[in-house]
Image 1 (tube, rainbow, N blue to C red):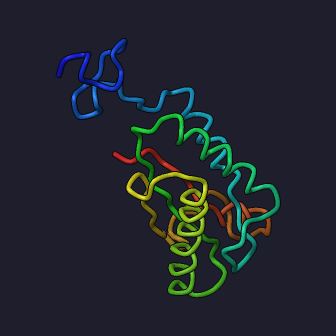
Image 2: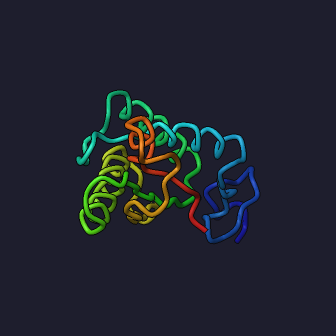
Length: 144
């Protein structure tokens, strides 16, 4: 492809990206994404976000828009309250709630995937209310 034929005549990029450089997420942006994602918490037994989560999701959407050549997986988790089956479904629905929010903010569906892990991967003790609150979360990871 000749520069005169591509979309970014003053920059080098592969033909698969119309001659524009690929915008793969930087380590700094990935660190911000991880920080914001750690603040995605849910109300107990629900797919509704706790107060302040929408603002963090807006910041995550901004990062995703900037790095348009990166894809992301959204992983849902629960605390251990309730049955394994219920928690599996709840974690899937929580991941989907985040996915739907980000799609609503303009992130293309082909850049996102979601999956629920139920109560299998706690990050804190399920013996305390504080620990259970930390386990009711969604993580956003760079897709491989």
